[in-house]
Image 1: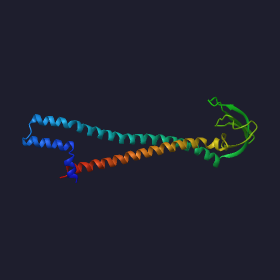
Image 2 (image 1 turned 90 degrees about the vertical axis):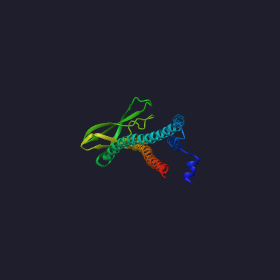
Image 3 (image 1 turned 180 degrees about the vertical axis):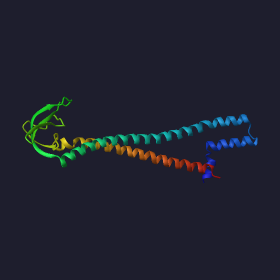
Image 4 (image 1 turned 90 degrees about the horizontal axis):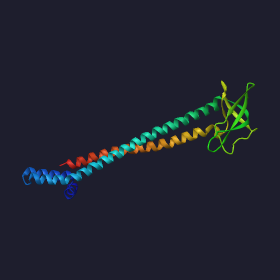
Length: 211
């Protein structure tokens, strides 16, 4: 069946081989052979261009996958650092009650405000500014707030609450996970297409030159 299909639809290589055979047997003049070979060149060039395009496409997927996986890993690492710091405060830090004494504006586009919380450790007063600004403010002056602090350095502290403590780890970790997942999919797809493309090309070459 394969031989029948090749005879009905000869490839450019088959046509070139036939021209050379006729030239060698003397049934075809050199000038006539040159004319027929020139007619075959567009088809061979088109096949070559399609092959190059396919290789570029596979290589592009792999490169894009590597870049996205790298960026996703960087974002995920930043989120991991924030998460570790929050976990360290929760497990190893001490907890003390504080009070919101004022609100400070961050000067951003949303014109949000951050709380300034006063807390006392071993009779000494400290202050911490919240890391998240909001508009309208999420805190009110005089409101009570729980503070986690480092017992070795009371100035190293965090406010309680999910937004204050877990917002940055969630954002960076989530974005990093999504980007890395897309990168891994593209990378895997590029590798699979490259492997199966090479296998298909090898199979076609074997079938073309098999007796």
